[in-house]
Length: 388
Ligand SMILES: [Zn+2]
Image 1 (tube, helix red, strand yellow):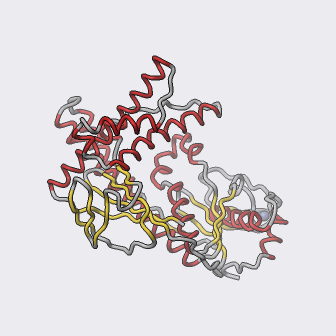
Image 2: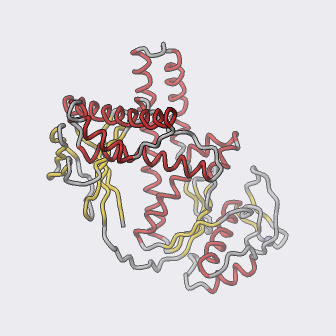
Image 3: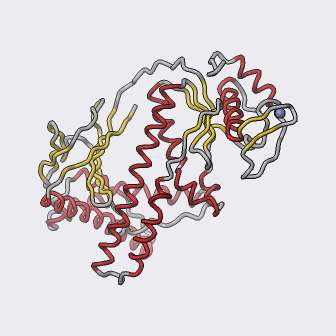
């Protein structure tokens, strides 16, 4: 099992400049290779592969002092990164989709350097990270690094630098959890609702940050193109974005942790984010909550805690009665589910119950939408449902 550990780097001015130069050199390497590949194809209909690039680079770095200062394996990682975008491009083209051609990376679109082999050009020594041609940078290890470090990535976010260690934890045997099962409905009025009606409020960081962000963005658009002030303003905007992103990630971690500690089986809706974002009116709030990221965080936390995780097709779970299976139509603003069978409860709680039933079914047998059968199976499940 792999796990990542991310830490802030405490750079001094000198180190920061060296990192910036290194990042810029990687970016240029990326763009030059892309240029070669494009030209070769346009003029000769020839394909330049990753190994061609790597050979060329090996030769080139004898003359180019900037290239000479790059760690060789990390330069290879950058060229491989370009290769991956090509592979993805062809895969999508083959599948009949309209893929975007690999693009040149602008200054603000290239923010990481990978070192594919720990110990090769980068090494941790206590709380100090030694980077070839940069020096030794202080790292605050606020949590323990587990397992064996395999790869290291340096990331620039706004104007801060981070290091991410990707570690191999080996074959970790995780005892399956004996905690109760839960169904989770994610939504707009609350961040999430469980099948027992527990709610997690929406943090809406972006909403509070939004007026601020808008003002900064407006100020950015007023600045002259390519001017120094524009670059400064862009930095300010990027900083606000990064702050929102960090707070959101923290929130996702906290909520996920709470859930995997309490439950042994988690069923959530498998979200089609692309589809939802098309619905313009809600896209701001949906973006805000960023459920997709949350579900991914929850899944990885569940995995390492021995908690079973199932993503189910949630089509119709809002309309369906969780007690009798009847379809009870409601519009977006109807917050209460009340059915002719006597079932009356919060709209999201009703949905969460349906999601749980589908999750348990997906676990025990073929997925079907027969609710009565769902519930029978659910009640036969060895998992104890909370509140029973
Ligand atoms: Zn009913």
